[in-house]
Length: 287
Image (cartoon, rainbow, N blue to C red; front, side):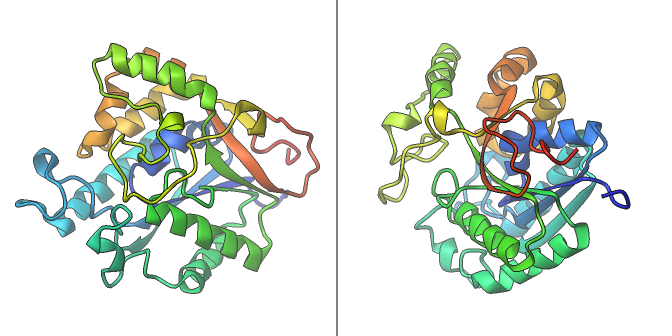
């Protein structure tokens, strides 16, 4: 460990995913001198176009959307002081059940061993001590999130490099408070715990039954205080201005946003340190 920096690798599906669930840890650990590597798997081409136009609607140009989102991602990384950004460049698969799921080059249709081999090469290059990605349901059932989980766990297995592996999650106790604030701001909000069929935006999903969002508090292994980094996390999210689904977070304002989003939570699924749980540091036992 003396001849290389401690390294965090976060594997995310789309531009903007890095800011919501891991913006705080990316900013915090960068400030602590830890190398932060962000791997973004898709081009985000199924995101909103100008004026919020959706894929398949008049005026939605997937290539143009991808270019805008790449620039936004780079801006977000500058705010969070991410050391290294790696783009796998797969096509955005859209929400579960969309035609884009089966489009040539989509992440969802890419064989897991093929994509995992590319990610494994990045793990060999960067030698991450800690790897963060989604759970097996991709947190809310998005095909690209599920695929990111699959290739990450395959790459971890193939390389045996990271000492610790985490999946992002959210405490169920947070949802009631979040819903109260959203309603106070005049936003429509269905509490996810009681609406397992909904995606994280509150829109109806494909009809496939999904497990509830997040976890009971006592099942969360790792609670990381990132409240001192609320401003860069907020600004990183704001960098993705083309995506309308981010607006309600930004409407909280920096102070309330930090209060609500000032702790990031994870489930530790692999560990070679033996550090007792619960823990408050992804690098506990490594420094």
